[in-house]
Image (cartoon, helix red, strand yellow):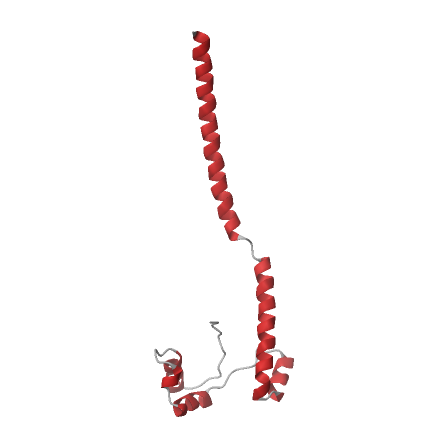
Length: 129
């Protein structure tokens, strides 16, 4: 579920509390009466000022039936942007994997140094005999 912040035009404290009661209630929306839902929705005004001019013009001409197509267009655009963002973000696991492999390499170097030292000691001991 996407959490979208919707800019609302100013409304009074009672309306804000009623809206929060609706949004953050443990009750299912089906438990609310149609009258209560209509009352809350009629008091809300969304601030569309941040939309591009062409979108606001299109919204003014849009009928309720056309909203579905517009939503699909926004969702498609959102998917494209999400894909682009994912391609731009670095692979954070790669850094973790590099650190892990570096630690393993250091351990192998340490073991190799110890084996070399042991081999040299054994060679000296053999030469002494």
